[in-house]
Image (cartoon, rainbow over all chains, first blue to last red; front, side, top):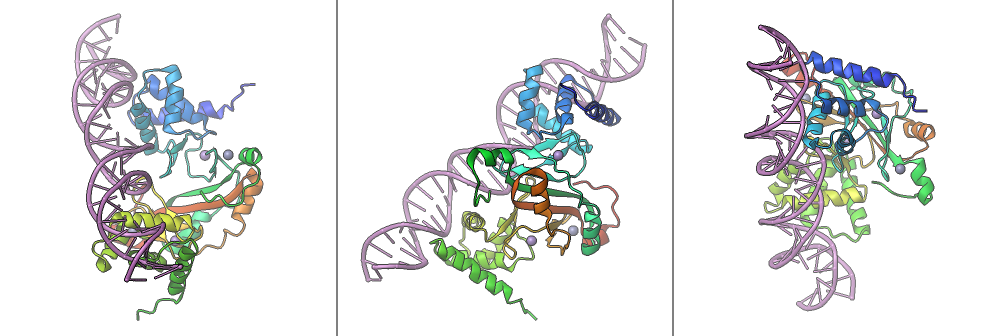
Length: 158
Length: 158
DNA sequence: TTGTTATTGATAATGATTCTCTTTTAATAG
DNA sequence: CTATTAAAAGAGAATCATTATCAATAACAA
Ligand SMILES: [Mn+2]
Ligand SMILES: [Mn+2]
Ligand SMILES: [Zn+2]
Ligand SMILES: [Zn+2]
């Protein structure tokens, strides 16, 4: 039933280890935040993480969530999917650049399985003379659930 | 010398036509903003556009630039490259989704020529069940100029 | 030329994120 | 187990690019 892949626990352990390596303390709040992020899959916002953490620790400040997420970003243990129009979203399950598919209706964010990204950055580096350190690839559209709910859409460019 | 490809004038004309089709008025300020955006290549921010427009019309408000850029975005005559950390940038030369290469030192933004994006969105649509309406692909790195200025860099993740 | 109405320009408001500062607490050693 | 100390939590103010507001101005059709 509730069988999570053991990789989630492994990810938590990795994150804790990395934090300790950086002389950071493992507080109960941090551990809770970290567990939520490590689960991945749902790409929550800071506010969403805050809501969930409060179930365990009701006095948790949203500032603490912001600070923890920022810290994890610094040490490359979480990927930030930042948006100018709405809240940033986070993926602690795959802490390296990877593409995302984003529903512009319900804002669901998922990780597609794609095979054509092999040597994308190498090709760009050769073409432009840049040293590429990371990339960001987002596809925007309407998810299957939203399509079903309101029929086919014609134009809906953001 | 100053031979611009005639496509810039064509782009200006396209933008003007589209604005008229939407019952928008062509003011001198708008035309100036539009000329700057149509030139493309440099991907300016609103503030940069404002600075340049003021050479022609010194009383121009930055609000006018924001409003014009927003309008052009609505009618799909400019591509917005939005950032959470710094000012958004705009490309009026190629008003359709295309990849960008961004220097994290000097913030130069260029259009790479890439050939592997053929049926990228189709593949994602098939894989995820989404109707993909647009995408965003950014490569972040150090440009050739910046590399030269300060020697090779090891880690510089944002 | 006139009338209508979109646009301008100046300024206030917004809102997610960051900053500041005091209190609390994790981690370590004795 | 307790004391020590620096990191972290929590609360609230500050930031800043962008948006909203509104009176004054001007584009454009008649
Ligand atoms: Mn992801
Ligand atoms: Mn471009
Ligand atoms: Zn959806
Ligand atoms: Zn550079």
